[in-house]
Length: 102
Image 1 (tube, one colour):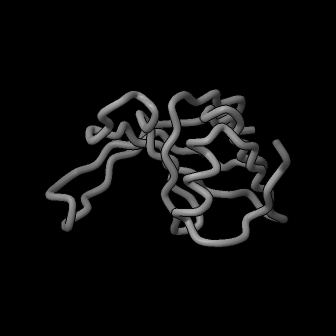
Image 2 (cartoon, rainbow, N blue to C red):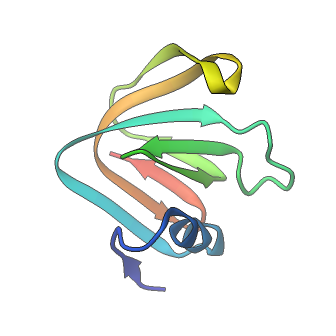
């Protein structure tokens, strides 16, 4: 498996994550990341939503290696308050459907 840069659409990248490929996201400034449990997961491969850069990705497991906190915000089109774990990441790395945030 080879590393993939942030190219293509979110759905293509999500397929890479689900297939277990490696994806590496890094920017010149910290990336604000929101993590939310996915109540719509049916088979255990999409337990968590990772939201950053106006894109949402799903993963099975997450390792957070930086300080983080919880946050609640009202999202009208989702029907109320949504609760997240949030952090400012330097690196977001997907491998074998596991996300590591550094």
